Length: 313
Image 1 (cartoon, rainbow, N blue to C red):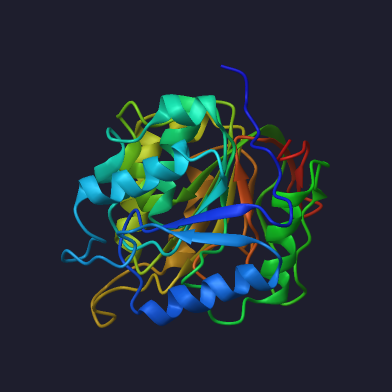
Image 2: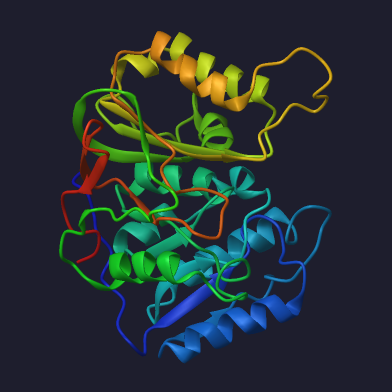
């Protein structure tokens, strides 16, 4: 299926706001996020169950899926932004209206738990989605200017973004030398692994795989990479981009352990592909937005990651 790029956002467009995973911690965060979008000239509509709470979920699976599907099928809605992550999108993958999304492609934004949904959309619809800031997380609390500029540039301009700019305080590092070309696919490592072996994972062979994680003990990150190695994935991808692994520390530092830096450094013994590390992407305020599905190029020796085509139409 050919890659599909959603229509670009224009001032005055209506953005649907949903909670397909967990609910925002307070209604005020939703209100502040809405005001931010309105200050930029957009309109916003909040899903009816966005603030519902059922344990760690924003309401029942049926309610969360209904909110998402209603935004898909509303012709006035031009983009769907997640309010926050948390946990819950893997429970919705067999309930989403992929046929409706193929008929009416829209921008979809989120990260963290949204990874599972975004990979499913890429697999089922070949639609480009965006791993980027969320409304009740970054947009409600004074979004970082670097994050903001990179985000809106990808959603509003059909031009190829080219080389991604890296802030001076977050310089990537060469983990394993080389160059690669391929589609950018990835997101949160734990959520990516939750899709592996299901009908909701796009082909990873030949892709530039990008991953990040948060609050995972080093041995758990190690185990996820070993699953990718043992499944043959690390030998068939074109390249690997490591985002930021935030608060990935052992639960008991007094016991023998490897650090997360040691786990990531050992990847060179498990794959021959180029690896670019410490890319400013992940669970941090200052980060890149990464589009899933588009062609990219990486040159580790030059510390360069380039998006080779436009991300919206």
